[in-house]
Amino acid sequence: MQIAALKNSKAKLWIDGRKNTFEYLEQNISESEEIIWIHAPSLGEFEQARPLIETIKNEYSKYKVLVTFYSPSGYEVRKDFPLADYVCYLPLDTQKNAHRFVELVNPAFTFFVKYDFWANYLNELQKRDHKHYVISAIFRSNHYFFKKKGRWMLKILSKFDHLFVQNEDSKYMLLTQNITQVSNVGDTRFDRVLDITKNAKELPILENFKGEMPLFIGGSTWTQGEEMIIEFIKHYGNRFKYVIAPHEIHQSAIDKFESQIDLEVLRYSNANAQNAKNAQLLIIDNIGLLSSLYAYADVAYIGGGFGKGIHNTLEAATFGMPIFIGPNNEKFQEATDLKELGVAIEIKSAQEMIAQCDLLLTRQNKWNELKEKSAKYVQNKAGATEKIVQLVFKGY
Image (cartoon, rainbow, N blue to C red; front, side):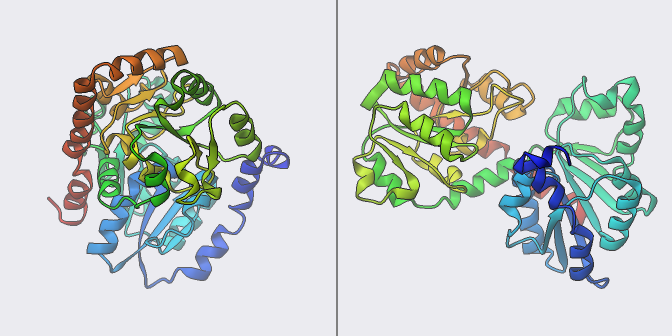
């Protein structure tokens, strides 16, 4: 990482961000405070933790909340999150760091989100008999833990006070390993996206931009997805209005994308209620708007499905719409569910996306049916946060 930091800005943030963690904690945390420590690997996992943080601050305000991140993509976006009393990087997982960190923070409760398990930190919490949990976890038979070389880590996981998992398959995998302190409560992200639905920002620029036209949104797009979207736009032209929200905002990448579009293109940073009316494609060149943008969409493509995995499909699904996703989605329970419902449509090329969209355009009743299924799916899956709170804080 130190070598990578010489040329890579993200790696440099990863290194530099950890240099003053202990100094920050020593200067800010008081021994008299009762701390709840929540660790999120990155931004997506933070969104899973957010409903829990909000509940703690609303119902258990005697506690201070410390949020730690592993990745700069989480920390840099949420370092000023107002409901967190303290936010910092998690120091590297060494015995010395774990001992110093846990002794300094002395957490009353600790929550790890989804899968970011660090052996030295867990051992330190377990030695001190601190209450610690994992939320929104998902386990599969091919996980490292369930192989011979990972048995040592499984022993550490078996000492969690409780594991809150997303599905029955995860629960079954743990039960087969004699880990019985496990509950299938679902994914806290459903609570988060429902809250987004209720509190979505009104965006006058989007209202004026869309007008009476159907709106296609490309959310958290990467290069391969953007190449497909360009073909999609060339095919449909002015039959849609288009919004593109790149996953990473780089001037050169936006310039390149914009140069390949023949329609009237406008960047959000230059948009106002007046000039938005005449644009046909809006590029979102800032952070934090995407979840509210979906409120205006009729169909979406969610990026990331041609790399390690897809980005957040639930933010789109909660507003009710068909969703196109790439093929690398099998690690995401919600993607599996949405595919079974027909809401998420797996595509491998621009031609497939166009063919599927053509089909939807000729079957308006089907389109409306998918919109209804999409919104209902999210509503029916909510409630994980309350179940976690009941067991951890209320004891039932």
